[in-house]
Length: 241
Image 1 (cartoon, rainbow, N blue to C red):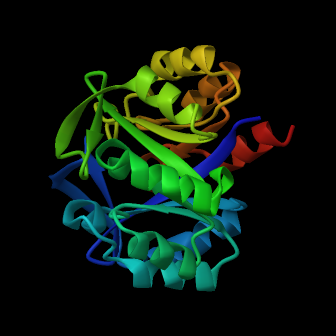
Image 2: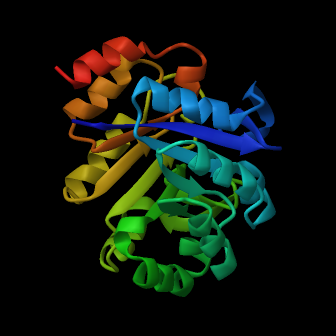
Image 3: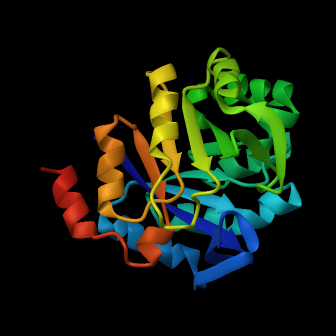
């Protein structure tokens, strides 16, 4: 059964969502991410994906206090990403309660550093962030597209020991028009043992069920919850049937 992972994206300490990663298309959903995290926990979620959007833009962690507040106030398993660029950043994330960290840009720009973190902290605590636009890996808060194609990029790091990949199709993100199911099916066909976390475009319970039917291990979704597109009771009943 697919793992359900709600998302909290943070700008200026507030819970927001962007559209296609565009900082100019920002919507604030709650001034207190900790309260949102508590609500997710009360609904039955065990896992939470937290993105420091200020950090992604600034190239270093910014909202570490919010991370600490969330991990102190809940028992959620938090994976944290955005702005992790240095040894100090990754140490800060783990020291402030992150169980896992998502690393994207560094895997493209500094592969040796990423490999060293993988070895130091273990593959079970590192998620490779593979954000895709027009088939290319995007970096630096989705502000820049690299020359890396998705499948060869994944193959390189799977051979290095990566087991967790968060893949976001940027054109789908925040659009509430359905996920890039064909893309995720392609990845799973190529790498069937990968713990793939699908992200971007979830608009309904049916979208999640569709990913589950295709054997996608995990899914991240945010805007669909905040916009009331997800029927939580029906989703839990389906998952626990």
